[in-house]
Image (tube, rainbow, N blue to C red):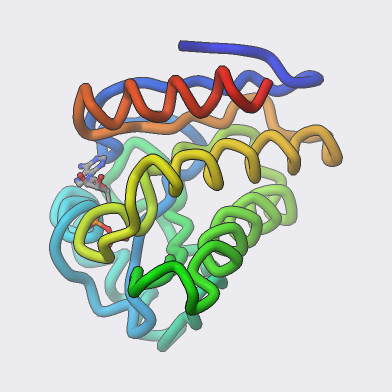
Amino acid sequence: METKVNATTVSLVRGDITLEETDAIVNAANTTLSGGSGVDGAIHSSGGPAIMSECRKIGNCPTGHAVITTGGALRAKHVIHTVGPVYKDGKHGESSMLRSAYLSSLALALEKNLKSLAFPSISTGAYGYPVEEASRIAVSTVIGFIRENDGLDLVRFVLFSDRDLEIYSRALKGAL
Ligand code: ADP
């Protein structure tokens, strides 16, 4: 699914984010930037040691914030590492932290003059955020940001399953 908001294309695809050719891909990292399972592990294993070496220099990233490194051997030139919330019960600030993870990544992309960005479904794997609610936050945050800010040509969500793609598609239709 693809749509245009102002001058920015918003697209949803099912796939492996490590294969994306956008200027940056976003990693669902942890606060210690030390790698892990899921999309984080996939990005480090495809991108090679240069990414981890920059992560070590940066040190850490608080929940809701974002940092940028090289893309190493990836097709994407950069990786934006953001940290989404671990979901407890929805009453511990999870929604504002998730929103902040998306906003920090988008703001960093603009600041670095990047034109295209690919997001995974942050927090909905090991961090346990219910994907329906997370998809609505993800999509509405991205659309709100690009309505307010020019400069990005493409924001893509790369979903890892047909089910997630379907859920994000519903969220996008609901947000337009
Ligand atoms: P978190 O710890 O933020 O929950 P995870 O990596 O555990 O992060 O999961 C986030 C989402 O990323 C999940 O939907 C998972 O299926 C998905 N995912 C895992 N590997 C990839 C990949 N290579 N490309 C895109 N999405 C991926």
